Length: 256
Ligand code: NAD
Image (cartoon, rainbow, N blue to C red; front, side, top):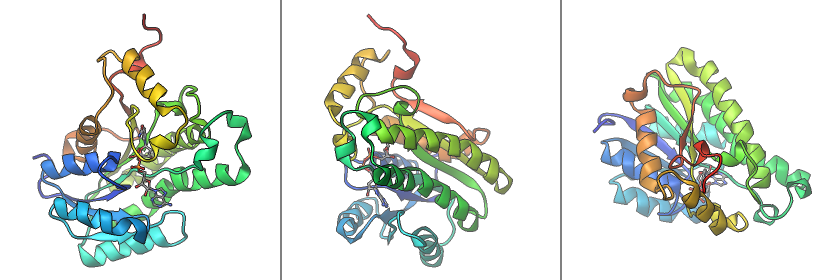
């Protein structure tokens, strides 16, 4: 129970297949109290049901693409439940029509929107975090290997993840004085709503399973348990890191 007595926010649950759902399950199993955000009213009821399953009731609306929704959500959480010890940001978006074919065909509008939702939103979350995390703590976001090497069809999302990974280092530097650690998990592929928008995703899953030293794909629990560690006091000396939770895929160059 490494999270006993800690309360935190999980942003990015859409359904039970979400990586954020796996993270919430692990955090709850480790004793954390949880608050959730929902992108819109369309998701709110489903997330409220999921929150209830964890014995929680607080679901706050927060569309990160809209000005002021992040600070307003934090104000509502501070008023309704109090301060936080950790935040999990598990949010990304691109028009799926541009997650297929060549990267060079990316439109300006989708480039900016993908960067805004998938990268800038994390900067905004971190900017407001010290107000609601007066005792310090951990913040974690989610990235993918496509930020480092070319993965077919990942396209603009790769650019957003590269920028996100760099922002993790700058944000860790900015928030260190508040006792807040900022890290990212580079997760292996896992079948979710967002992932199903990436062209030929099942081929990526299959390739990574075959390449993996462990001979399998990652699970929600693999990612969730690492996230629990990264927001817990057990990782008190780790900040500005990109931790690969990919069954070792990113360490393998050639495999016969
Ligand atoms: P998912 O579809 O379950 O979650 C994506 C979440 O982003 C959803 O809850 C959605 O509501 C939220 N979101 C999108 N636009 C938003 C907005 N404007 N405001 C607020 N929320 C918004 O998919 P997932 O795979 O669990 O994705 C979670 C994170 O994990 C993403 O950052 C994704 O890039 C990352 N990731 C996924 C994989 C994978 O293979 N699934 C691998 C590595 C990293």
